[in-house]
View (cartoon, rainbow, N blue to C red):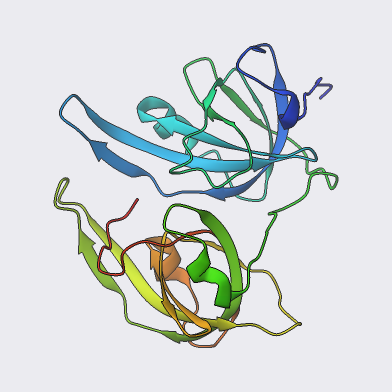
Length: 229
């Protein structure tokens, strides 16, 4: 398939006729949302090429259409999505923009391209986590020393139940192998971090051993506040 593509770093809201070739590095669960005016569902994903990264979000009909199609670590041609200023409350990527899928958006699977990298990390030492502040997203890596049993959180607004698991992460050695997980809540111990993994992350992690885990997009919040973002 002969397709002219544009690098992520060159795409802006002022440039509409583009196609990007990207690898999917992260795909969220489908999330339900509700406010006084409306309600619906969405999922998000992180895309990468040689030039950079960008977040994409699909709502409602597009959520149902594209969620089964998108697979992590596979490569796709994406075009005709709407570009908007990135919401830094939810996006951990170094890009001023993000994509919203619409009725015109196309996502076409393509052959793997080894030139397109996988997940990019920018690790900070665990002992510096408390310096990052509550609003900044960052990456850490360490060995899982303890895993609690699965628990359930019930959102007061939607009454939706979400499973979560607390794990204890400790500073790792030089022979770290990257295993990518995504999370939203941490609180501190001395040279250790207690991490809350939501949904499938907490359900699927291997708690029978002590694996090394790379965590991308960590955010510090009130330890008593387990509200899922």
